[in-house]
Amino acid sequence: MICLSEQIKEQHDGINPTVFMGSEVPFPFEREKSAMRVNGIAEAVSDCLPLLEEWSIPSRLASLQGYSGVYQGYITDLARDWLNALSEEERQQVEIYSCGPTPMLKAVAALAKEFDLPCQVSLEEYMACAVGGCAGCVVKVTTDEGEAMKRVCVDGPVFDAHTVFA
Ligand code: FES
Image (cartoon, rainbow, N blue to C red):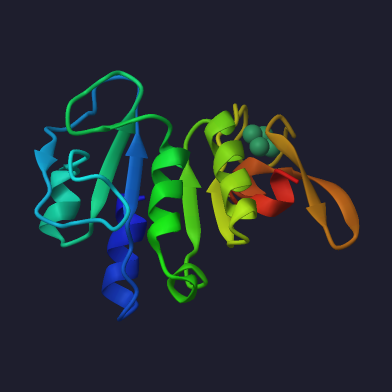
């Protein structure tokens, strides 16, 4: 997500990524207070990823562990607050990209569906060969021709969320 947001920022003038990150274990970096406001997010939810802050990419953190400066709840609820604060016009320009555990991706896909937004998810699966030979990493996706099994290792790992979590 960090690389993606950096690329979007660098290569697409006028498109401003916003990053939300959740964790139920201590965040693997020193959190710092952001100098950037994020619409719809309470001021007390101020902590961010320092690297993104350095690149002028707004970010906020979520957790159920009671860390100060961090949103107390699920990442999808944090994102929902942000989406609700956007104008209709702004919301129509949003695309969601997500990676993480499957239950979270499923919740993100549901959020995208709720707001009728495009959404891509990077799936995590156990991989035995990782080169497309063993079919150990297949997921069911919906295609124009009906349901199909796709290998996460070579057909993904990034899929349209709406084809994976119908
Ligand atoms: S891990 Fe073997 S096909 Fe994907």
